[in-house]
Image 1 (cartoon, rainbow, N blue to C red):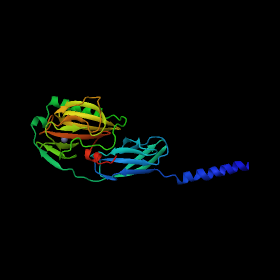
Image 2 (image 1 turned 90 degrees about the vertical axis):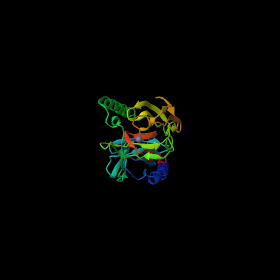
Image 3 (image 1 turned 45 degrees about the vertical axis):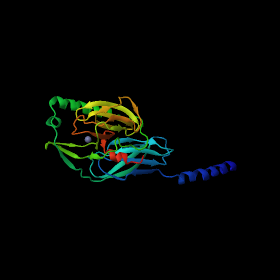
Image 4 (image 1 turned 120 degrees about the vertical axis):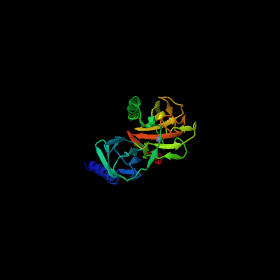
Length: 281
Ligand SMILES: [Zn+2]
């Protein structure tokens, strides 16, 4: 009996300190303060339970991937229409849950006035039907959450000057306002356009507004969109590597001249591509 007690006390001495001194779960939000429409990272360390966590922010779920034992990372985003303030981040992993928060700062997005041919600003009934169908298709192809395909940082598809920033209010023909949901790069007709990260092509089509358009699924709800191309060099189903040439700059669709419209969707949220590219993944 004595030996048994001695054995139990040895186990107690060695096992107990493990629990006492085990590092607590650490949650880091990078950057801590963002603007509406921005992406950010959620990093978890020392998570001992084996259930892959999920983050809940503003009623949207964001998936994590494991990066080493007990370490997880997720890319989150907040809508451009989100009000400034503090947002709760709830993380669930099996029966455990953790909390953190994110600060969304106020940002005044600039306005610009444009003049385009009336038929591009005020579409006919037939064109309106086409635009509606294209929007439905676009939401469908970019609405699925598939396995992770992206590797490391996202890159700009073209290293040219930006002509229109994300979130700019465009007042067209003094009557119609639209919010710019991507970045426009200045470009020459035919310049090569690169894939922002590894992924799978899920759409190659000529759209009313976007002209020749490519959509790439990077996994975990992240999609990149390339518009107004003169040429599309890939097809739906193609597996693409980061930096691979996928098309050429053009002025198809609603464009005043050759340029590239580059958009990012994350869980259906239109994200400022610049904020995603700046993340050190
Ligand atoms: Zn654009």
